[in-house]
Length: 373
Length: 92
Image (cartoon, rainbow over all chains, first blue to last red):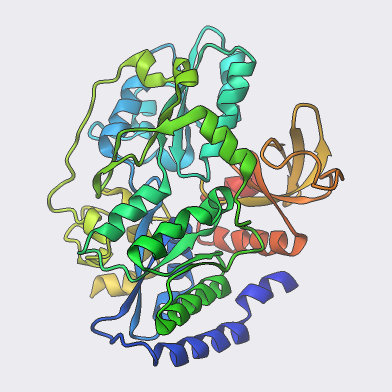
């Protein structure tokens, strides 16, 4: 496998590490007050733990694991609303597998299925549309979940549903948008984020222009990076170089996949089908203004919440759980009192433990020796 | 859900629907977001695309595709969840 070697070549990684250590020596940061780089994407978090990249960094550079895993920031109350809708006997409730085990107040969608609800795991939103066409006497609800990576797929599916006149198909919309949460985190003086590694696949859709406010308003450097060790280390090096030079700009390490303009067809589809919702709740982070998506006026007939009116749910996170502090870099997963005891991958209490892209799950999987300390 | 899987387009059907091959398994994919032809009017047949939840999201070169596939296969050793993405439901 010649190609993998290019981005995992131990010699290339070693060279990069040496360069990183040289560059970090020129930073004013110290091991006690390190340069703190937030990797926003759950895929990045997973790769960092899997390859132990955080341990290869100079002592005065540190990763903060951000909120870029949509399953991890899914509020409990939204799962309860899904379960309520799924409990209608005429409903076929369709979800991606990632959301099946996320606990709500009344259990997970998996529990609901074992109690008799018709909950099905789909691979594509188009599978749900097909189910609606094959089952005209049932009502099919798609659980739309995720950032701009999955949002265009939902948008095109709804465009197809409308074009084909499918009237027994609905969307439960839990799509969220990346830029407002970044703005909210950077505006919080306690989060202490010095630089941002931006997600490759969201950027493939939205492009790089939307990030300009990060250097312009918050004076932080940002680099869009890929998912291989060499990508991530190169991204970190580019951020360190900007910091040393006193520059803040948006740079794109992942040009081989991310065009600066994003995907215009995907952007147009999202623009037609969705509009920004007033407020959205994020698990562990609270309510963030204009950070979630709702259906645009032309697509409201597909809105599952208008059709089924689930009871509004607000479930507070357990005060002992420190999910929010982990998400904002104020606490490491193993410092949470529930970590590894009441909260573990087999029986997750917080969503950061459910998804394999969550910081707590990754920490549990790859740092178990440290957890025992 | 968030993981993109590279597939090689091996057939293009009507209405932007296509078949891609991922690790030898044929899967249906929608080409709406990348189109069935490239900027110069050439068919995308034979090209590699990054597939998210059944939709081709971007066109990538073969080296990038093989890289990502190998990375996912490597991940499968630790992450059984990746299995259905690569080999289809029920084969993970």
